[in-house]
Length: 192
Length: 192
Image (cartoon, rainbow over all chains, first blue to last red):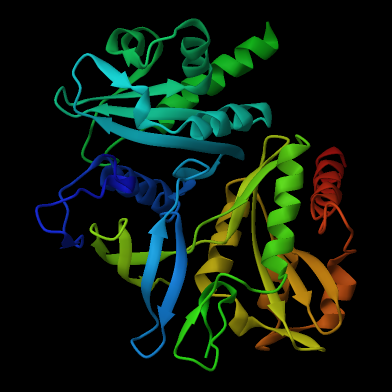
């Protein structure tokens, strides 16, 4: 069973989520913080989508009943050199392919729609056991989906069409270098 | 005392928020839905910023302890004709001015930063008792803040520098017409 936003089900039925290990999400948050501090871009993770049902104002405005919602958009968006940036980041423990069940259908539709409006949409996929992170443009994701019935994308497709992002100390996951490659391709298409 | 995201404190200490009256937020959500359905823009409200402390997996993954966070960014962002759009929307029951306490300092800083990165940032302010809605660009907001020590912006400033948005049936609050005016001004500045 899948849980939203990297929250994992533990052995207890009631668990606390204050301390989790360093995840792709945390690395991306630190990267985005680096971009912000160094005046490179302004990109943020959106808060978790929830429906609030009850708030207890006697306990510091504690939300005491709320539910996770299926997100209708992606987790990250923002602005880089005036361009609208929008992406979803996913981790998988698979070694040979990325299961498409990891990403909601309407999140893919959202990214395709972003492209239509002139934005830059992509996926960041981390194969955790291989320690490899790929950038895959929405164009290449769409091409795959249009030409394959498979429920997963083989890693060879990422190797061929995606861009490998090397993890560094700071910024951790410098995905804007991949965006730059894509912008150059766009501009070259305009010129030719 | 201020409550985040339009949630109002009732007479009971424990209240349900499923049915609220039609608010600026709902009008903007419907407007954004109109823009999306008519292929005009892809702009969304971000979920409420919360910190999740406890989830009860025996009760449909119910969030049973969470707290509101001070938002570090604005509520709305997205893409229009390739441009990055970012804004905050506020209602006030004041008739002569908009109290700056309604908007967090770092939300203003965020909008200024958005402008720096080439995005289009603005405020939408509704004077509910006057039934008037204004668009105020981040440039004009910044100008006001740089030249005034006041803790509120008089409505005359909105009348002079802002753009009045007439409420309509569909889309309810057609704020992209104001963005168009701003884009034209930008382009004219580039040409001259």
